[in-house]
Length: 623
Image (cartoon, rainbow, N blue to C red; front, side, top):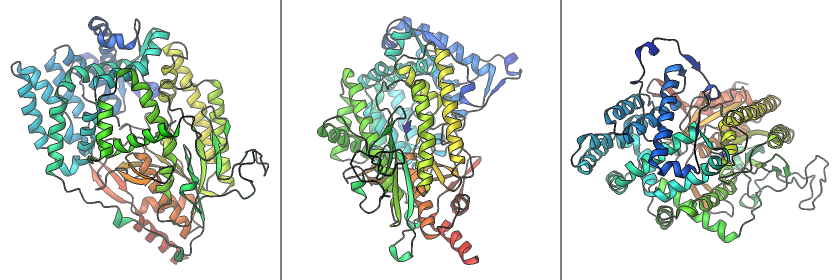
């Protein structure tokens, strides 16, 4: 399970596809598990392949052949996947000195962009790199001229948040970080199995391209983006405050149970706002009410293997000072994403850019642990805002935070099946009417976790096992949600800028009468660069959203994790005022009250709390 920005540089083309192939019917690929499985032999560590010219050339030759053949053979009904193929082909062509070919790949990939900000920024870095390489003489001067010219032409109102995220990315990157990530993600797999899968091979290509081609221009690009941001220091209008409904006790509200299914919630932050199991005696180590759970005062918890765990907040086994350190850096990264010049952002920038390669894994694991620990409290704070009748019921799931997690196995899959079913039963039986799920899991993520530890047999065997586990989870979760028809399940779409439906991400891909999926826009209502799509019912602000973290301090975060609880918040406020609403009615009022926004070839819905309340009031008056 991953709590919900991946920047992908580059693009690709069909220029190497022979006309004879293009005229043949290609096999449709409608979901990610239908993609062909490829693997590549490696000798020693993955990092050795990255740095060895001969080994890298051998890998990229095989990868390029497979990518081109897949594009010829399959009709892949997912633009994100095709763009990722194009990106790798462009980077391989560039690294091989085939610049015209790289440009063609880039142009074909850019043509697939449909988010306004992504369209505007398509090729921002790659086009100048290619033009400079083709020029032959004074490539640095050509690059800087081309890049500066493209930056000046950016429609800032459209790309504002994307530019800030790109600047932060440039300020953080270093060769040590990138090579350290390769070590932590793929060295164990390579050494244990002697092979790496397609996704890992594409990642190695991207890493080499970034280190050798992009980073030499790092500071110049960051300076240009800083200047652009400074020249437009007035933030775009925030459209959300005028749409928000704030309830008070004078509104004659009915207490409403909101389930926060996440990494845990700190009850001390929300005094008087927690759901309480009055039949349970706190902290006596017994199951006082005989429901099968010990000390479930605020809800229930599960460990990584789906075994029952006690307490509303994850138990930490590291010194408090260490958690405080990662909390400090976490705030700094959030400030960097919003281009805020704070002491925390300065320290985070320095720490990340100077991190020794051998310390990358431990540092990233520490950041991930803090993120998992704080995430649920942050989500709960957003879900409760402006609703004195809200009561938080906790469903805590301790996700793996390590870069090499405990490998999923049959025990893990069986435990998750139990956890999914029992958690839905628990929240349903204890009166929850809406549940926030700012997380997701897919077959690919299960496979990735197995790869990290080098378990699961061959690439084909690992792929098949991950698919089998995922099928078990998908079926049990779907069955459980159907068993609670009067609970509205609200999921985040994800932050990987891809199609959650194609990837079969659950719960984001579910399309049931009592489920909703939420995407992220910024403060002005423009799609963020990171939000996933495919099956998204409604969008709301997911950029630099303020909330509370364990202990009571405030932080701002960006992601669909921050967007989803705003919809949960609206659902809970509607229920507090109109408790008779069914889950289906609740969903309808949220959707019908949303404002439609026209984008390139499609429409999205932007949350409008006030309009949804107006519709609910009209229904109540009519009765």
